[in-house]
Length: 292
Ligand SMILES: C[S@@+](CC[C@H](N)C(=O)[O-])C[C@H]1O[C@@H](n2cnc3c(N)ncnc32)[C@H](O)[C@@H]1O
Image (cartoon, rainbow, N blue to C red; front, side, top):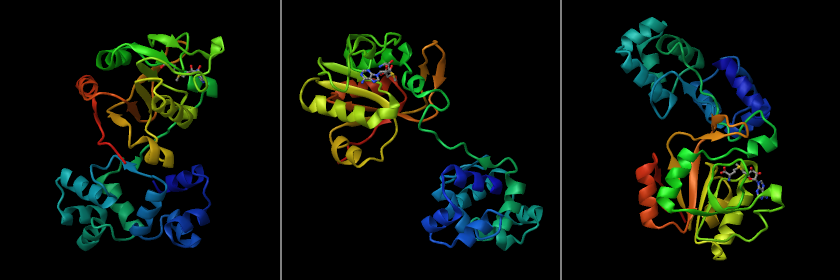
């Protein structure tokens, strides 16, 4: 686990000094932590900064809580866990409060959760394939059936593809010289599963076309990426957002299905309460309260 810390820092593109600055310690502290020397408090700060979470321990919002729930799940008293790890009982109590040395923490983890390892970091991109392939993943019919059932027939797919199973009265196709970022949108319902590498551009376009009244309702299926100021300031006050439970298996151009390596949400503009309710009956997840 400690070895993975250095890997995580490097894959974030950070030097020890950058990481140290972020958590308000000196670079020497980070250097020592990467050798397993230091305090649990600093280790937890580093883990938070790197979005480094452990899996294989147990439930809990913090590492300390995870330790406690793991010990309890294994029906070990504080004294028993301490003696198995070769630690004092008080040390285990401290660790379960988030205090102690990294060395003690590692000894306790080795006893309580020898399988503990870094949880795979969530990726917000498709990974290895080239950009064009990554941006051409098609919404499967099984999901589209829920869209049609809840929102009705799709009038417009502004970023369509000849191989896509999405049924829409009008498709804007790059291959036919169309451009969904330029051509005027039209119809009652637009369904948008955009190239994820240009997510914000497409959400902005969807919003602009909806505000202009060119489409009555827009349903966008996109990765859960919510960090832009525009998303918070302009979109969230007028959008209804549904967080999907689980992931969708999109199709590539060879017809192979692959689940997204990231979480998904639906951003809808102009959806009625009835449509939203019907969708939530059909698809696992929930509608967020309106922001803004
Ligand atoms: C993620 S795929 C989704 C296809 C389809 N909407 C679906 O849900 O199955 C996005 C598609 O947008 C197309 N695309 C990219 N830029 C575009 C643009 N400016 N105008 C129209 N289509 C575009 C790409 O060809 C790609 O196939």
